[in-house]
Image (spheres, rainbow, N blue to C red):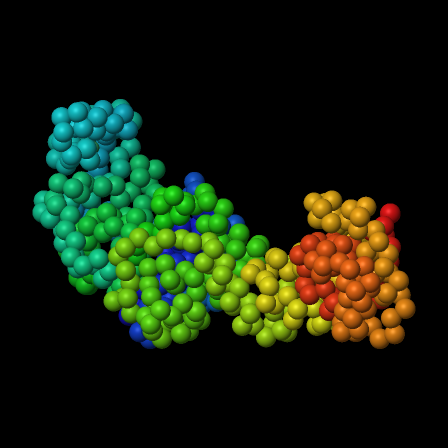
Length: 487
Ligand code: GLU
Ligand code: ZN
């Protein structure tokens, strides 16, 4: 089996794209086939080198390795379509010569006028075949006006049917699929031409792609027939399977403009690539037995198209985040720490790599927060107070206003006294001392007692376990922060 992932390098990689890549990758791995990564960069006005780099970076970050494509090469190189333009021009010329395609000189205005008329007269609004049989004189006249033609495929006048790998039998009636453009007037080939040409050249056997491309399938089937007729393909046609839509908020299709559709957003927030792939696998596929936590290799082992659903999948960020929390809890402490460090470094809380003292704090503190984190970025709020100098500790304004009130002064003062004279600086001894001073001594309820201490020392009302935190922080810093909070 040979499958391809063929994004165009425009904008930022998004999750819909990653889902398509993942399903193709899993299908290739499951069947022992080949995962081809091909770059559809034939639109010079929209494609960018940055976006190309981002695509490679995305698959690299996710660990979806490709067998043929950029950087690794392969028997059908090059895999950047911008480097294959001569081949498309050659195929286009042969399609024109053989009559499978023809030049269309209609201007945008003319097309638009006829479209409106067709709609008004309740006829199909697509291209009406106006230029299918122009006489030599008509062509001459258009040329004399300086018009440059587009190239259109002459769609056979019959229905197109295929057995979709996901959706079952699908038919497009003849009048639903007008003659469509293969090459722009400026000579740039469109994806409707270049993808079938390369799918044939690269011996692609299965095309798995988003449902938004469903209506281009009858066009491509017709083009495949034409390619076979002119000897460009060997006559075999890939099987097509269309992956269900991914719906976002309000049951609308997840849009590239939604911030959480951008892959970079997940990287910035500290989603693990393992977790993101795990979640995206569930968007249209299921492992069975209600299993919802699995790695990509397990997915590949279990992946069959029978378990891909044709029904729209709902993107649920909460669930994605919960799965990320599961993955974080499953990591070994060293691994988790290594993944957290860049986030802390970006926030200025550690150097990269951490100093020995910072490493000591992390080794003690990361186990305290592993259970509580759902994203790596949350580690900054939970851990930074243990790593920054006392004089730059930033206390949350709302938490400070709520908890460090004039009434809390005696609590802080009693805590200072209790901790100052403590012999053994361990979490258990700290707990005993504070309970003795605040709960027994002042007669406070635990919540009222420890809230001010927590905000004074950690800066927030929500923190890792308090007594362990104070142990890690050490006595001098703890006392300094308690005293600072009184002024
Ligand atoms: N570049 C297209 C897309 O990602 C792929 C088209 C195709 O699968 O043929 O939407
Ligand atoms: Zn025309």
